[in-house]
Image (cartoon, rainbow, N blue to C red; front, top):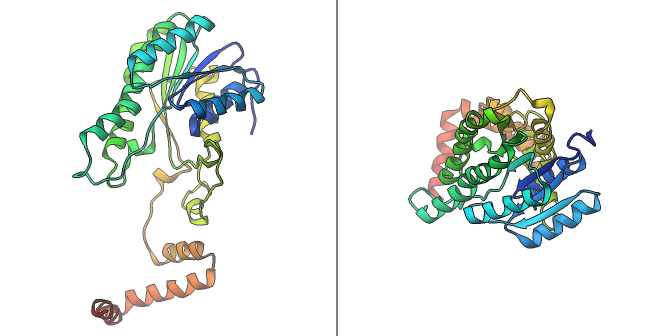
Length: 304
């Protein structure tokens, strides 16, 4: 992967949720390209690990324990960063938490409020407090959303709502802050395997099918998102603001029909055996052509 070593020379960036996962990759990429990196994260242990990791790469880095859903935490930390560096050039609003997967009826108001607070309210809070300093020099705010802002699986309501809110907040902030030469953009990653960027790093457990589902041929990596963020935060992207950019290996634009050929290919990948895939594919095709055989199989299953 190509790096631009001095692209962010003498600049200061804040990355929320920067101790692990996508945030850690973004912090690393911006640091390698010259930024003084400041990580906001609630996990002090992971933060300490990431600081050592970045310092070993020659990156200037600070860590602040911050609950980004609490305004007093955000205000204190942002003021401290500006007091030390005298500038803030880039803010990456990456911090976020997942969802329980419980059905709508079982979801609690507490879960809803917590996810909205950490994933969405934090973007507003951090942008609000950083903008008062960015007004002096201009700057860039990059908000990490998700493809779940535009497509969903069942039982993801709080998370999807939080990510959809980020998209709306992005274009609102872009209009409000344009007069200060502050650009605001959103990035929506799809499936990203963060295993190697956890604390401690883990081995990926993805299957061939996981990768093959993506038109680009593989599941995404945190480095993919970091490369896009680095471009958007740079002067090369000075005419880009208010938009959402999807980075998902082509999945959201992929049309899928569950025909025999696609099912056969999936089975071949899952079992890593093309011959079995051919046999099962032939059986599926036969079942579709012979209704009486399909009815007989259903009858046998019901009786057993």
